[in-house]
Length: 101
Image (cartoon, rainbow, N blue to C red; front, side, top):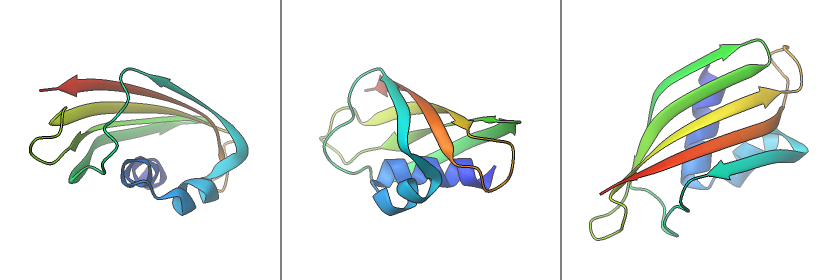
């Protein structure tokens, strides 16, 4: 489950190196909800992470600097791995976002 949380934090911080190490070459990534601000969040929190077989998910929130809208965004990621081995890479991600004012 740590991998799932690490991927969420890498996504939030824009850490492409970490993402690329854990994803297949051409992952399917679907995004539902508004686009995030073009600035990095000041705080990223993963509230929970679960995995079962080839699937995993996590949820949490991102806080942004004062004056940036939204002030907070909630996220949920659903991951599908290529197999059930611990070294499997992510082949699909569905990201859901909800803004808070």
